[in-house]
Image 1 (cartoon, rainbow, N blue to C red):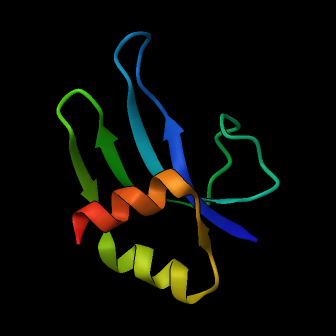
Image 2: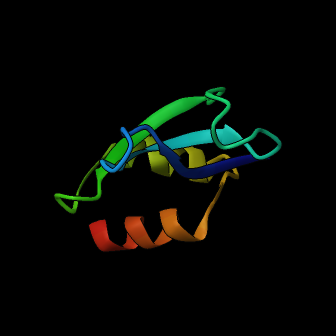
Length: 76
């Protein structure tokens, strides 16, 4: 099953995250994701999300993590 969740990519003390579609059996830091769907910068509080691709994966049956779901709700 696919899950849409955040993956940390920032340096130490400078967090930033990718929004990725990944197999739910994979670890969060494995790097084996299906597609990058966006980015979220914590310090700026800004998010860039490919909404059409997120909708595509949700229509295919992907689930969202709680944090990713809240981030998507803020964008709408």
